Length: 457
Image (tube, rainbow, N blue to C red; front, top):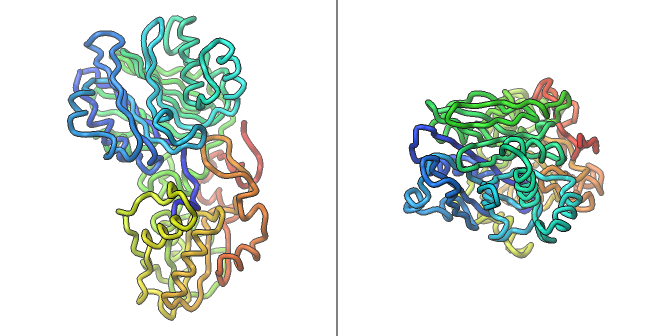
């Protein structure tokens, strides 16, 4: 199924326990909670603030969090400060070399960096770094960012100053956590495109991409990191720098449509509620008569329940999802991806047989997956299949860390709604309207460039 889905670039996690307890299990649990944001690689770096300065330990590798780490790592990586990362690549290949954290020694010490997002002017900065002998042609955005922080750190009095100088130069959507052997520093891009949340557990502070990761580590949400804010965590507590905060914000709407976990709260908005409200908006703009409403697991279920509540048409579970099948988006051929969809998802025939079915999903990218799902429903005896999508048509690429492909690969960019409807074999097709985003997230300023071509950066 994942071959026709968008993906987030990654999830980040950082924790500092000044009392000295080992935080490796907390990082592990946090990364498990963020696994949906990236399944290609995982890693963590730790340090003991009471130990030798500069002693950063790192382990990372390809695969899921549970595949990369073993029980012995909780002892071998023991430390009271650390960062963790899960990755899905949008820039840089899916290789062990691009796994994070990026740990680096330099003349003044050492650091480890985890990064979510894309730096839109990374190419320009990379050229300067190559001239200085730092970056190379294959450097990812994350490496470019790390080299720049190190370059600034050599010239500045503190890691916070180096991060602020770097952030003043880079443009894009990002959430970055930097661990030095004695400090943990987090920064969110000035537009707030990428999420970052601050949490606390007694005297321990946590930074993470989503609230669920903080809760997985036993913490409670303190607040969202402000767009442009730099938060420094030391034994003395937290310090906030808002010098880079600006008035224009553009939070990624796709966090609420698909990326974030259903039980997350981002920028004060409950993701489940936002998705359910999208389903209600679809129902208010529809006159389709049907017997049941179903959602594509898992991303379409909340919107489907909202549609059912608003329309009065019964909600039904029509699919069984096999959670133990490999990740289909890394299958090497189209035929293997097609087989993976059928292995991962099956229709419960007695639920749909003879019924007029409304099916809800979060998006249509290329149309291949939805076409297969409709074929499966009709083969199972569905009389009609009406497709409702809880986002507008994708028309433009994303440059901020989401793998929206080029416009030529977006079926809605090249074809009309009627063409797409016929192509996927649906009896009708309806998309969410851009105006309905306000229904989903209220007055939250959002980035919706992949729908309307208005880029904030």
